[in-house]
Image 1 (tube, rainbow, N blue to C red):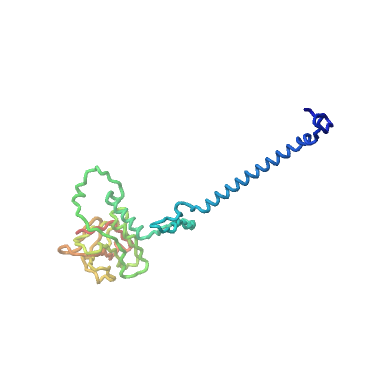
Image 2: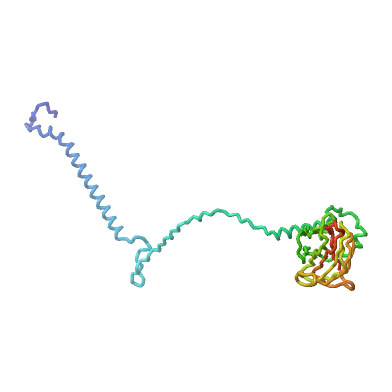
Length: 291
């Protein structure tokens, strides 16, 4: 039955209709309270579940390795985890270095020996510095030439010191080149030379028989001496005289021993007289010792 606006009581039974009108207003409030009560219950249930799970986790061992092991009824202590920490290595950069260039020093003696070896190689392959064709047939005159004793070096010899003497390079007398000469010049005072050139045959004595001499200035007087001493004698008296005084001429062979070959370590070509009073220079282009 519909209730008219402003009606307070029922027209049939006389009951008050105010309570029915207020009921719709209370319905939203009741629904809200109901929802809040249900939400609170859900929160309580969820909190209880979380609390229970936390209690279970706290009671359980951390992992299988740490769980106690029971052997024959006795619980063993949990195994310890092996932990290792790699040592910290500090990398130290290499020290900065400045590259250095080592420049070896050059010995003058080594340079001289290298030059001598080069000259000997040139002498073995050429004559008077001229190239030789390897296919050229041998000269019969060269085949007849006797072999020679190697001369290690030549030395200027001056036992009697005198002023005004000028020496050339002694190496030029043994380089087997006719275009190079060893020479000596003395003042034009009428005095003899009293100088010479020594041929060193090496570290030990050699058998010697004669000496070949070449000169572009023939006519000066010479004498030959030899010795097997370890050192070059300082005075002429310490030498052994090997020949009588003779006059030098070009391309001649002079005996070093009057009889059979002898042993010698050094050979001395000693100059005595000049070719003339005006010609005080004597030159020797070639000296070779024969065994």
